[in-house]
Amino acid sequence: MKTNILLAGVGGQGVITLGLIISQAAIEQGENVVMSEIHGLAQRGGSVTVDVRIGDYHAPIIPDGDVDLTIGMEPLETKRALSRAPTGSRVVMSTEKLVPVSLSIRHEEYPDLLLLAESISENFHLRTIDAVSAARKSGSFKAANIALLGFVVGTGWLDLSLESVRNQIGRIFSKKSLEINLIALESGLEMGKAAQQEFLQHPA
Image 1 (cartoon, helix red, strand yellow):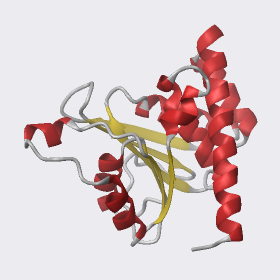
Image 2 (image 1 turned 120 degrees about the vertical axis):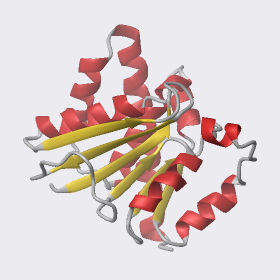
Image 3 (image 1 turned 90 degrees about the horizontal axis):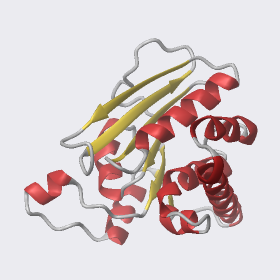
Image 4 (image 1 turned 90 degrees about the vertical axis):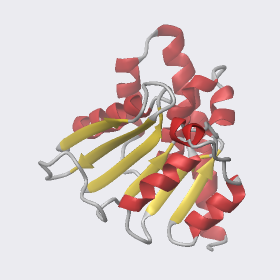
């Protein structure tokens, strides 16, 4: 596998945790992985991006234009991150809106979510998921990042085995938190499989 993955969101959404699980799951599968993280204006609410490079890479930062898959926890941050991605690349985006600190500082309104998704779809292969609703099936909306991961794996866009993903979730979480996150993973996985099946039956 040789894949450049860009994760984007805001502080508090578990973007770095998501990057760690993907990285460690790939390492478990025998892949070479390098990862870097960039924090924005604040730990909570500021922009957070994580670069995960799976394959024979040494530099931790993905060169602009070399992103294969963008995974966004927040729509506006997803849109912002796509300045580094090439036209036609794949994008998976959670539809949870969390107004970034940068937007609040400029006193700007959050753009219409449907229009935002449509603008992304004009240049990228986009899949969207209400990861918060998927996570709530587990009993905690805080597992939205894991539901999003399940969705990405379910679409087939991320070549990680469920076993390796589950193993790494087990390394990070314990007891009740582990149960919640595994349920969220399965919820997202089923939604991802359904989305992929729908696409295969009715390609855009």
